Image (cartoon, rainbow, N blue to C red; front, side, top):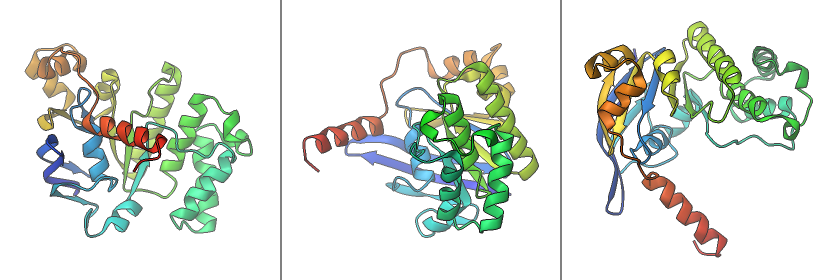
Length: 265
């Protein structure tokens, strides 16, 4: 079953064409890595697929729902873990989980059972009543990922899920994600700049560059095509070694923040 179908997706910002007519499909239960240099269109693509940004044109179907016409159904079908923390640090770990479950209308009994299951799996159950502001960075990340799985999403999106974490925490998080992917058949879509993660964890890799999908293969196929010993070598082979600037959407978000700080819309 195709859990995600993207067809002719386009996003422009004025004269900037951030995403240029991309199409791809993802099978249910797949771990899918979307890779690309800075400014390649990764973040813009993920934001459109998860209904956070309106496409200029094109279509996306997730779990049978159209992102334009059935956005609420799409949001109920997915979990999102952002690169920047979205936890309420003045609440406890348990309260953050409970609040998320209430927003997604998870029944109270299931909410309690699922919260206990996930916090124990992430070794946070003993700290369930501690304020999040007392947590380390790794603990906060584990809590965010646990929260993303709380409502039994069909697809979870992980944006740079292990950035800045030590190797032990990175491995622990991926073991956990893989366990839920296998046991609950949850499709995982993630972005990362850690090529070793993508090589080890993903079933399929899509490389996006200059707003276009330039490769869509298994990690091993990409390495074979590039005659490379690692996915990082293959990635550099297909995208080049030039340093890239940040994405158009990052620039636009930055300008919006500057305008807000000066009292302008």
